[in-house]
Length: 122
Image 1 (cartoon, rainbow, N blue to C red):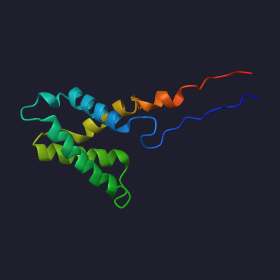
Image 2: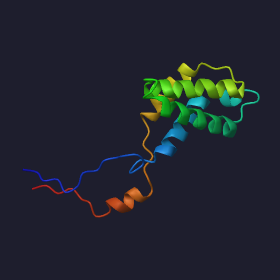
Image 3: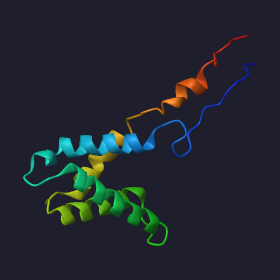
Image 4: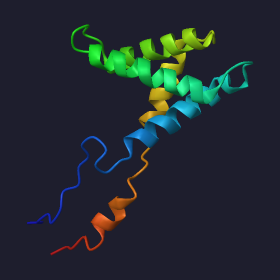
């Protein structure tokens, strides 16, 4: 029988750098839809607005029965409207989610925590 010496799991920014994954995925989605190229689009202002609106909808998820994708889409819709950037929030949400589900930016300290872990076989 094989015995496990370690189990690695992730809970809220333990192993994966969630904030960096979110940022990178959104930048890639915005770039994919060529929103960076639009006149008047300012990434820093957009990101700040999106994060504020996203926090609002994330808190509303349970009372309003929103899925995580609806919360993201509504936050994007609001951010685009506030920024005066006409864009389909549904399309950007879909692209963002595809990128987000396929990225893993690890916490820098992860490798230090894992030093000494080795796989052994009997």
